[in-house]
Image 1 (cartoon, rainbow, N blue to C red):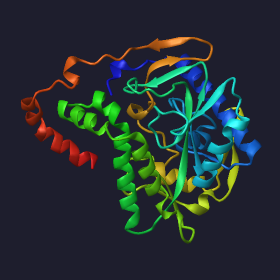
Image 2: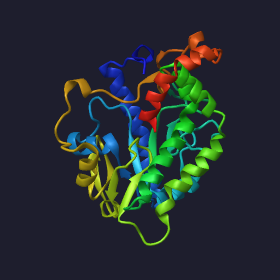
Image 3: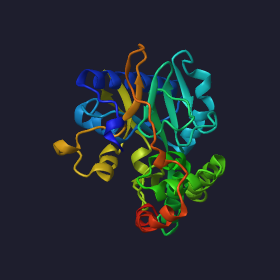
Length: 314
């Protein structure tokens, strides 16, 4: 990521950003409670609730986990109960430009485009992420599913990689992958993600939204019940086994990270709040060298770097 493209938030605007996310999460929590759907705070949101009773001071996103069945129910009923004046739910089924394998709840009349993603045609807006959790095998089949899902997410990410790749060859590679139909990649990702759904209930759960080939497996028992937990001025739901979840994700999660690691992970190129304040807007422009017109000689010259890069991706 080129930090020069990112919106730089001072403390006041970071807090304002967090409060916008909190309003979205409140709506998400309301919808789930009205519809009787279970969810659990996840990632930095869960860590913030346990360690800070709210936002991690430098955090810039909010996440939720749902068992796959609950997630599918949420997708079916959300439009019946959502506050349509202020929010909308987004996934691959209702937005042809959307290229992620999970859903987002967004705030209307806002703008939020992550660095590098200005090329995508999806609807934008401040959002929270909603991740499905799937049953996981405890044998050789799970790494195959994880690896396949990871490759398919690279196919879906390809339009971004075609502009943001670090070398000419990498950008050409992703430009070629961009020709793969989105719906084909989405369908096969779903088949692999729910592969372990059949048969006896599995001991483990997994989220197919990380880069781990082996995956971060959670005990199903950790998610069988939820507990209310304070987050800022609210009470949101957390998995009853939150300690196990956090240890899988962060190890010694109560220890603060080094100062150099205290930063958000969702840098924005465009950001407009619900009150109309345009915090900053950077229009991404790409050098002529990032486009397709590259000769065969340059392509061959970059193959060495490409092969090295491929070993890291696959």
